[in-house]
Image (cartoon, rainbow, N blue to C red):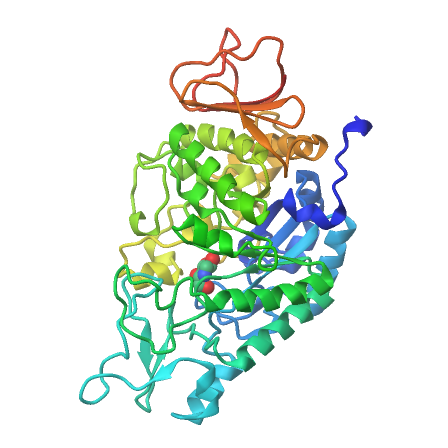
Length: 536
Ligand code: NOJ
């Protein structure tokens, strides 16, 4: 097999990478206190290396009061003590690199924690002070300033975007009140972030995920929101591109890469962030949001590749993350698409069906051109956890008035050992979020020993993906197939076929099956909700 080993230029690793997202709190608990930490990740590096991923993306690991799971950062240059220390982070980065795994960190530029020294200073300094200029402080409207300065909708629906402070001024926060928005028109805000980027690049970080990347720039007049008005007062404003061009100049000095969290309906506007002097990649949320329907998925794949081509950026493929419903649950529901506004408690779910589809979707995404993201637990086929309401911590739940179950269902601590208390996550302590009963079959130890498990499927697929020169970045060609079958070739003689229809599909004669997401039928045909990789 030596001859077929892929040897992409090292600098291009990100164009084909399989990147594993670590939600630190819930991945692995090294000190046994019930909260995941860096020691836990370091101990599990062999697991990640065996899984076969190229890089780890860590959700924020910085000092934080955790009003929004760490997306409220109090100090971008230190590690939260619940997770460890800066020295440990440095060790983790270098130990991961020793086993061939790069590190991507999460930078949160739109807002800081209300405990960040800048915001505390702004509160103390009072109206009109230079400290307040780093944020969006304004007097209120109404006779006594009792009304917020404008009517902007919150990114966490159901709650206000402004909070009034005791001296009467209001400050803007697109998320929770504990996450005041920074004023990106201020040079100090730009300077500070470029410095933070350098701080982490100096420590060997290979990439940065940019949180809420399309929200930083605001219309300086802070006008009321008018539905459909272009430009939007705070989404996807043109000034952002200049910010990312200067970030790119910094990352180029270190050969590091960016992945933007850019939720935008307009694909052409989305692609602007991926121009050669801006971000390297951005998450493909269009694909993630699609229903399990061959036509919809095919249109999304085509649109993705068409939109990325002119800017020369590779696509990314994502099925879930720490904000969205876990894949096996989503695909097991009546509505298999994803929309934040549609999340509700008690949605009927067929987990067996969802799991079959998620297995097929794994082979689909791992065969598509570009880079692929995998969220911790996806390789175990974890379903969304239905948490007791009194254990929910996610502010999205509270800010919706309790209507939205929030995002904790995809954040439950991972099951490592089927037979141990708390599935081996923290055998002697209470986990920070409860794990559902009945998760023993999902535990990594039993799956590692089971040739039919989700973990084995991911390991095999990732290993093949590394070996096959046609996979990862590069062209793909659709094959003739019925509308319900997604069939395409990659490179020289590798094909991926996914059957979403109820009629079993005859595989091409003399094709060698390299990997299948589920059993073929008695006559060797591809059944519904099943995918194969073939040598043709
Ligand atoms: C996107 C993150 O993924 C999410 O978890 C967070 O709540 C918001 N940005 C605010 O930082």
